[in-house]
Length: 214
Image 1 (cartoon, helix red, strand yellow):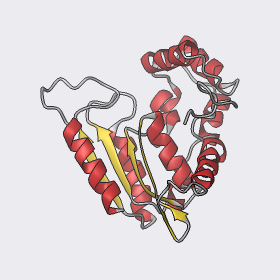
Image 2: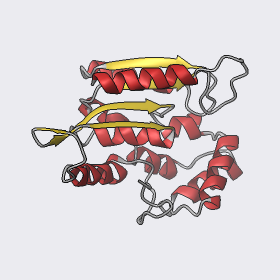
Image 3: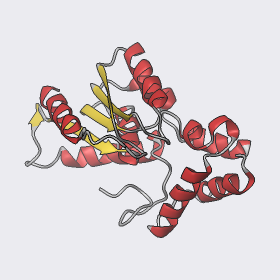
């Protein structure tokens, strides 16, 4: 599917908010449950989710609002976009510029405050508190305890946007809530792996084993 505010979908991008994109996924699952081609157990569809970066965040968001999701594999997903883009109320100017450019280049339709917030922070070197509040209001970190789906977290050791600490925060919240959780580090992410070792097969193998199990 195309997330809201992107490509062929309507609406506005809300940064994978549980109340917006998370609810969208819940409606998609309800539709899938009506299809004969979807495997079910007593009418409950067997649902697993995989995805990278923005596609990792949506899994945590959706699983916090819909317990029909049976297993998720968020890869290089954040815990807090504020900490990733506006660390200590400063701004990661490189990533802020790149992400803003990508949104414009792909004709994305974000919430009208998102682009001005990031561009303003890049230009001034500091994020406004009102913009930080906006990003926090769209976050899923305070709902991780609601996730019941077994969760496999992949995080890149050379990631300069979403660091290992972000996965650590997600894992601690899930484990404290009693959710089956596993964390795998690999050489990759939002950054360049300078090693010749390729972890692609590891990620693929672990992902399929997780989905097969749960």
